Image (cartoon, rainbow, N blue to C red):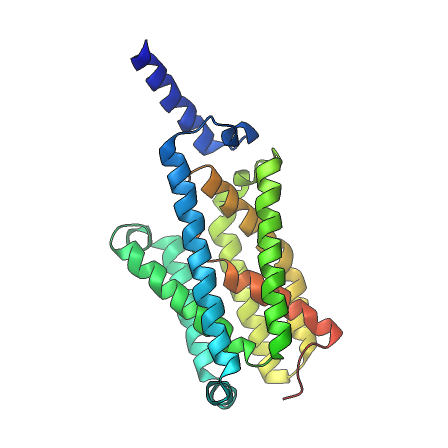
Length: 241
């Protein structure tokens, strides 16, 4: 009987991986599921700390900030490498999801997203950057709360996840390119407004997949932070550099 119960519990866990339910957090889950979820959110928290700390160095140290403003090529290089990493994640799972390559992938993803965010943040006032990091974290926490308490199945959009992510990254790159060519903040505003709902959907999908033990969210701070940052140009948060 105990053996049959164990088989039944394993079957139930398999169902939960496909569709998340609120009772998943009411004691009906295994220790491995708990560890998986904690590890996934722990990785996300570590990425946030690294990204935020690196960005602080870029905007707080005058030498680095001045160098970035006069040598904006680093912004394009880091953004380009980050986009390549996203393509690898979407189309070359052997490199992004197989040990030990997935560890190297995670390190490169975190490093170059930090460089991209830090480089872009040097164009903004320091206080606004700090506040918008807080806003980004708040939006992420609210997204986690929505997934936890609702029974909406965001994972039904999972097949489109890679396309959504690539669309967001390409959109941000195009908006950034138009801004640097025309120096028109409207390009950033339009880019941010268009990307924001897709970014939220991506966060909701990935958080629910983590809670359902179907995948790991490597890094959404780049899209979420830049999307919110660029929306704020409508109230003139840009500095006059």
